Length: 361
Image 1 (cartoon, rainbow, N blue to C red):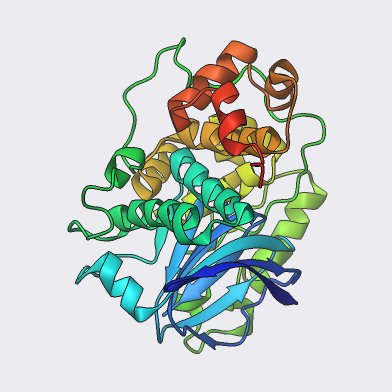
Image 2 (cartoon, rainbow, N blue to C red):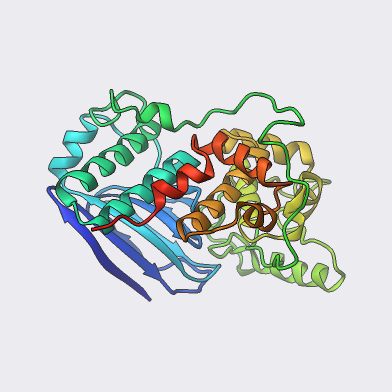
């Protein structure tokens, strides 16, 4: 079940909070895109297939919907909450010019995440004509800077290209704010991870495949599910889509998606590169290389990006103790938390408290 609540509407744009309570692995019926819209996830994750290309959408991966494209959705992890920014054709042309997005998805780094949160704060403030419009232009400009090869009216001169990027940070020493945390996920970590997709998933297996080879929206075939159950009964990771030691090789995108799902689910194996590679049945080298190639950032950087997003959630909710926050999120100490947040967002936790605090009417 999907519902939408209008947060704000202005000249040429509409802002909605979309909540989906579905819980299914199969693809939904086709939906036809009616306009340009940017969709960012606040909580949860889901799968989206547009014009035959599938992607995992979560708080670190947004998508741009365009008119006339055919979309399908799957919700193998339960519900999710998203922000949908819809633009009229006139405003889209004003912001994007003649630029054409080169891909439908974009990596949401911590600075783009902060821009998203500031849009929502501006919507709550009620100043639609100025504060919301300005924060929205910043968000759209940063988005277009990633999705279009040439500068657009919204990204040129807006500073958007300075606040986001998909480039790999420099090599990290042991004292870097990006150094791995001392502690992996807490005791509350869950073992629920969505199935690892085969290359192309159901997109490539749709042609007259035997029933045992037909994949669901998670990319797992009937045979895979049977083998996975047998391995689970023996306490071993599933070899579905195995590329180490034989079997059908998986694409880099499938490996990266599976790693992101494990990290999002706080799977115990996601606490380290070696254990995560074992869980996904690939070599550590293959996992590290595929992930960096697909997302443009290392696994270490990405894992800290996820934790920074959770820290922003807590700070936005008024978290009083930075030391407690650091301990809960697995950082070595408060200083480690502060260094990492500043590296990702460009602000200290104290400054972020002020930026994210509810504003007086």
